[in-house]
Image (cartoon, rainbow, N blue to C red; front, side, top):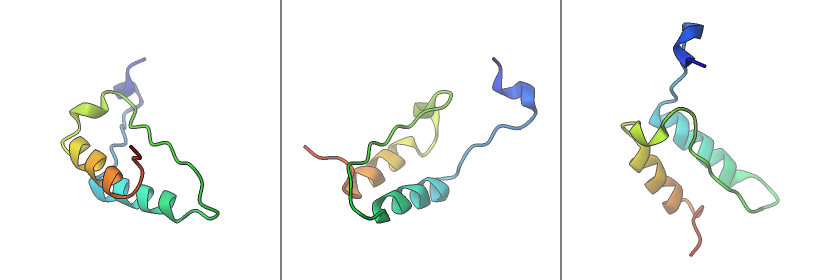
Length: 63
C-alpha cells in the first residue's frame, strides 16, 4: 500500500515525539515501557537519532 495514496501523510515533529515520550514517563503507577519507532522508514527521519537520544536520556533504556 502506498501511504501517499491517501493524500496526507502525518509526520510528527521532534517536539511531538518528545511530548509523547514525556507523557509515557509520567504514567502512574510506573511500569515497563517499550518504545518502538516505526512507520515507513523511521531511520530516515531527520530527527531519528535525536529522538533515540532523548528516549535514552529519559530513563527508557536500561542496560
